[in-house]
Length: 150
Image 1 (cartoon, rainbow, N blue to C red):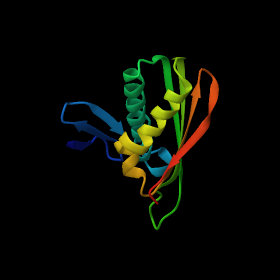
Image 2: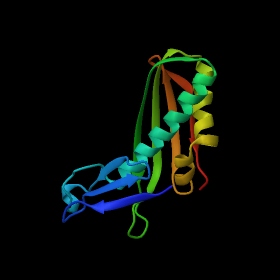
Image 3: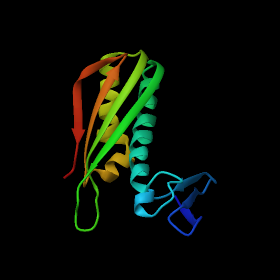
Image 4: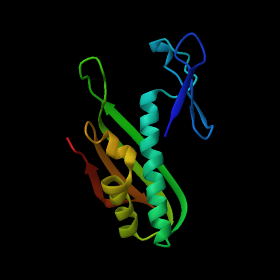
């Protein structure tokens, strides 16, 4: 896996490209001297958690023949000062699913994603605790999970 970065302007706007030619713009916020032409690198980490776990959950539920009519996720990260850096300390993920899906299968899909399959989550686990919950057809499931290797 390889990513290339090209600087677009005199500030912090970059275009990143993967080996298949997909481009993502990255920038800093104006208060940090950027032009806000794309998400920040830390926002991309949260997007990566959402996308990775979303792929896992949908894959698991499809294999179990669950009918998904809507799938959404919200991810928030809390950061902590560690020297000059501000890594994530806690990441909160809320999945909202709709469809003909059994509660136990939805909860298990989230658990499997974070505990076994999601490479992005496994990458951030040494420094951040990931908390997640599942809302199925507008009803929060009682199980709420968290993973950490700290």
